[in-house]
Image (tube, rainbow, N blue to C red; front, side, top):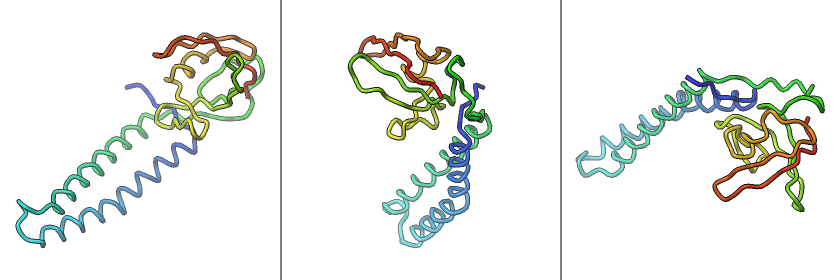
Length: 156
């Protein structure tokens, strides 16, 4: 089974979510189910149906997080990336495409990707393309919308 790349912070965030689901959310859903069963005929009880659906979602997310955390590879960010080092998962990178503004982001695993927070997946078109490259390289990025080049202007 392939591993999932996570930063220490991302790993902790998912562990916290898992703990919350197991200790708090399960109890909330169980209480909703119990109250809905006391509400009369179960066949026509919309609240019971909604609670059962939520229970299925919570249990599915618990299973998903269990597997994700069990197969996770923690990205060590020791802050020692040098100019001549190749870009890897965990690298903070600044790229520039043509006349557009430079963009800075950190390459993370897919489970932790959040472009709004400046975290892109190693499986995304840009992430996949720049892995293994170095400062100053011009890299071809292939996306479903077309192909373009980016220049790596900062690594670290």
